[in-house]
Image 1 (cartoon, rainbow, N blue to C red):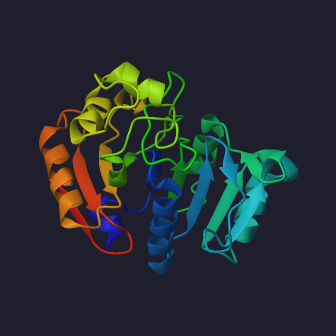
Image 2: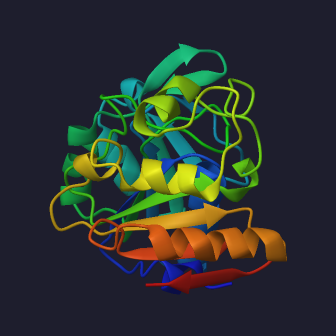
Length: 249
């Protein structure tokens, strides 16, 4: 599965991943494919993050603990292809990300071939609609990927299934407790006050429908693709990272 072709990612990109339903998994797999091509990857977050695992990154640094962060990144890129930089500890199992301005400053030194940014939080839920201060996308982003978990379709709009379900109600016609449909996702994606308003000018926004692992979910993905606003969404990609991937303009 060639994720780099599907999302049109090449050397020099700053890719911000927002939404819900598999952002960390997608970033991890993108990093693996980039490093297999011999490219250097710097990954980070602009929101809260958990401590990375050895599978997710080769080396990780805490910016607050590095007297000269730039020098440390340069040093470790001599031995590693994928480095993750986070801000500081909030508690033992959670860290703060970097300010978006710092992400762009690090990118300006061209230490890495590609920068991957976890730019939104969803508490491992498959669907959300953002608050006014979300997502936190660095201004230097060249490509944004909006992730939605297709497994949310058919489930109830509640706290168990959705991160901040009241925000979905705010942006759609769906009331709390009602069943989420493809139209619910389309209404959130298309709304001018959800994601597109935060995307830097000239940066394409790609919708990725994750967990499309059977014919029913593929049909739902095609329905969503046909209804999204093509003036806001440059491309729709769907599939399951463990199975296959499809993409349509």
